[in-house]
Image 1 (cartoon, rainbow, N blue to C red):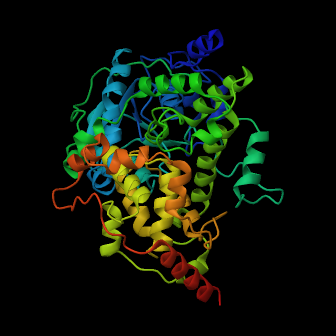
Image 2: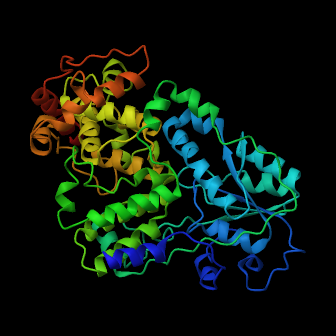
Image 3: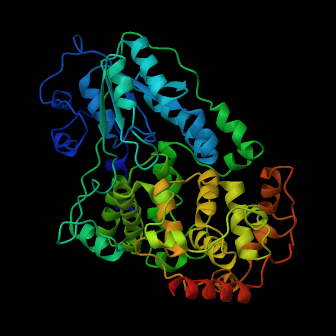
Length: 503
C-alpha cells in the first residue's frame, strides 16, 4: 500500500539534528542541566566527553537520554551487563545480549561504537568516568526494572554528573490523573483519559560526535546470562528476532496484516500472525511505546481496523507502570493489603510440577513449555496458567511472578506484578477471586483443533522437541502426567477458602 510505504520512510529511525521540541520532552529529567539541550550551540572542540548509558533502551530512535547526551558533547555509548541481573532474570538478559550486535552496527554506521562493561553498575560507571574523563552520564530512569539508589553518589564521587531521563513511554508517570488529582486505580477511566490526551512525538535519532579516544570494551557476549540459561540459550535464540531494525520490520509486517479481526484473533494461541510479536522488543527497548502508538495511529487514520484494541494494550502497559511508580513494592506485597493474609501455599512439589509443565492440564502445560523454550507465552494462556497456580493449586502468586521473571524474554517488572495481582484478585482493578478459569473450557474455546496443545505436548512435534532440548536434564519429561488436582475440586476448594477469608 502506498500510504504504508510513505509511513515506513517517514518513521524509520534516522539521523537528524536535535530539535527544540526535545527541550519540552525532557523537562522532567532529574538533575538535568538545560545547557545540554542544545539551547546554545555546542563547540565540539571544547565540549567534554559524556557517557550515554543504554539502560534497557537498546536503540537510537526515540532515546531521550541519547539525544540529550549528543547535545552535551562527544558521546561514549555504554551498556552495562550486570551479573546479578543475569542470575535473577536470565531470559531477559539473554534477550538484551542478543540486541547488542545490531545496536553496535547502528552506532558504527555513524563512526561510533558500543562499549560494553560487565559488573555492578555503580562500580562500572565510576571506572568508566575515570577511564574516559567524562564529565556527565546520561541514562534512562531505572523504574520499573531497577533502582536508581546510589547511582548519583557513584557518578559524582568519580567526578561527573548524573542526568536521569524519563523513558519514552506514552505518558510521564503521574501525568494522567483523576478529577481529584489522584492516580487512576481502574484501567478503563485511565484509558479514556489517556486517549483524550496527546502522546508526545518520538524523537529522531541524533547525530553523534566522537570522543578523541575509546575506552576498552568487554565485548558483546554476556557469559553470566549464557551460563544461567544453560541448555535453553540456543533453543530460545532460535525464537528471537533481535535488534532495532528487526523490531521495525516486525511492526511493518504487523500493520500490513492488521484488521478489524485483531480483537478476537489475538486470543487464539496457535495464530502466530494475530499479534504484533513486539513485546520482547518493547521490553528491552529496541522500539518505544511512543513509536508504536504513532505508527498505529497513522494506520488508523488510513482506515486500518483493529488499531484501537492494540492501543489499549499499549495503554495497559503504561497503567501498570504508573501504579508501579506509585507503589514500587507491588512485586512483593499485595496492593490490597488485607490480601496479604489470604491462605495459600508457598513453593513446593506442586509449584515445581507447574514450572516444568507437568500439571496434567494440557493448556497449562503447553503454555509453561512454550515459555521455557521460547521466552514467550501467549497472553491468554499466561492468564490461564496463572489462574491455575493461584486458584486451583492455591499457591502464592509471588511464586509464579518469580518464575515468569526468570523465563520471559519480554519480562517487565510492572506488567508482571500487575498481571499476577490481577489474576490473584489482590491488585488494582483485579479480576474477582471467585472468577476461576476452567483451563479445559478455555482450551475448547480458543484451541478447539488442539493445534497449540499438540505443538507443545505431542511427541515428535517441533515444540515438544524444543522444550526437551531446552529443559534441564534433571527435569522429568512426561507427555501425559496425571492431573495434580481435579479441576472441579480445585475450583471449589478455592471458593471455599475465599468464603472463609471474607468472613
